Length: 328
Ligand SMILES: Nc1ncnc2c1ncn2[C@@H]1O[C@H](COP(=O)(O)OP(=O)(O)OP(=O)(O)O)[C@@H](O)[C@H]1O
Ligand SMILES: [Mg+2]
Image (cartoon, rainbow, N blue to C red; front, side, top):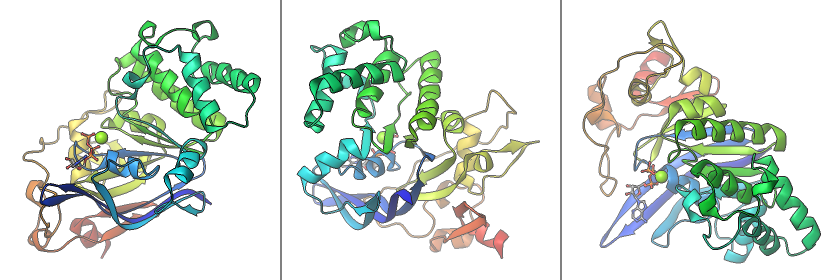
């Protein structure tokens, strides 16, 4: 069974007189134990999509269409109390910039303990304390540092502490929004390795939101590429991000442009032309393909008709008129 099934999800933000459609009829499924990376440039709706799962959207956001089903249960319309329960036990979220959100006046172990006691009041104090130490070790912090204050930790250790806290009530799904962005390269590599290990050891399903294709390549089985509120390509990470002898298997010109902007230091470099221009204004209706104005391969049809999502190989699909042509 899928851990998470999002179908046709549409999310609008009210802004003064108008609104911004940040997520537009997005469908996505995550299987048990699967790690899925969501990538796309700033403002394409990654955080909005992620926050919608635990229903943690800002107050000016509304879900105007679609379904979110977590472990077989539909979430939209649930009360705050029900969601509070599910948030820790079924889905946990590590926020963008979360490592700076630890309470500066409490020791790390106490903060994790409080998370367990608040969300699992039935757990005894002794059991909760034992779990705190387990979690601290699980994320690679020495138990001797459990009583440290956040300011005594490096950025990488604070992020580990946040991940430990998010796992306090053994969720089946972890959504991590830019978990490595603010870290130095060594800490980035360590946190990515940690997420990969947690996935295997704890049989955790993972959604990792990132700008960094190489981070997604290291940790995720599947990649979902978003552009201006829609999914433009998704497929196995190895397929979508493959480059060999100057040839890429990515199908959408936007994915190819992202790959050009992220040369793979461990492999071959391809020089793709930089992306010029900006994504479209999401407060106005959009005709045709959202990427057409910036697409080096745009055709006439791209400016007038929304591209359908086409299956390229099983599990690999793209919403692009070029893919429609190749398939027919
Ligand atoms: N609280 C809000 N009120 C109004 N508009 C918002 C709000 N939050 C996000 N938006 C808009 O929704 C769109 C999607 O934003 P979102 O933060 O989900 O993008 P993102 O892909 O996570 O970007 P980044 O990579 O910068 O984190 C953007 O156009 C953004 O300006
Ligand atoms: Mg974001």
